[in-house]
Image (tube, rainbow, N blue to C red; front, side, top):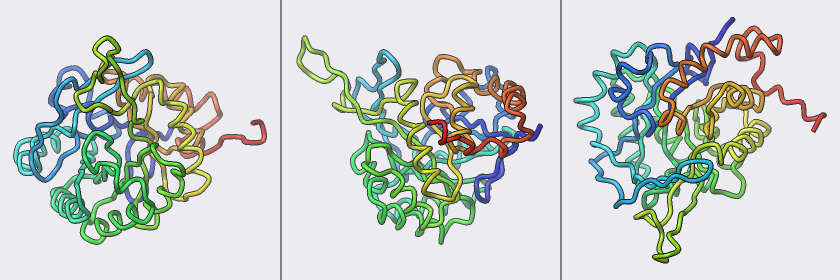
Length: 303
């Protein structure tokens, strides 16, 4: 059974990745997760300068997911390259680094600098709803194309564009990423949402609003993957509420060539490696011999 998957210029040994912001810098999972088994690890998003993040509260549990407004709390690129990347590069799996900036130049300089350090790929976080300007490049197709194109010119490693669902036509934004030279698009980041303490008549999150993740957003993510699959030829990485093998297979059939596990890592840290073990039987159930055999095989005639 061939579990490998091709994401433009990036080849992974299997399609199970762990999402940025949900796996720390991987040290946190040492001794719990068989990290080398994973298709790829995405450490938390880094920015040019250290960020302390948003005021508390930063997370709120919901009835079907998690609402967060962390605010890209991170140590900055210098600390990442000095303290975190050497450890990550010894883990025995592909390392994809998520970067975020306020300007095109921020994205370009981060992608070029980190991309030169031997990582497998760069994920351009164009879609964080918890910081000022965080989604600007992910809500306009031309702006998305501009930042991806500029980063592609200066960064030799594969580029993945992580997009927001908080738009009217996500396929148009994905096309902008493809036109800019992205190797793949990541669908989706969190859904803009909020929680309210009605007794105090105020938002619970310190930031007012945040991003909803977990099972509640899976149907939205599946819809986005399906729509983008119909419109764009580059590979798709599915994200949103994935917690079991049925979820994984649904995303593959809808058109994703790989998936990222996010919120589930918090309550079931070993879920990702367990999903890798379950993939061969799920593929065999469809008579498939590889991941590629099932990607985008949704039968719309039966809708």
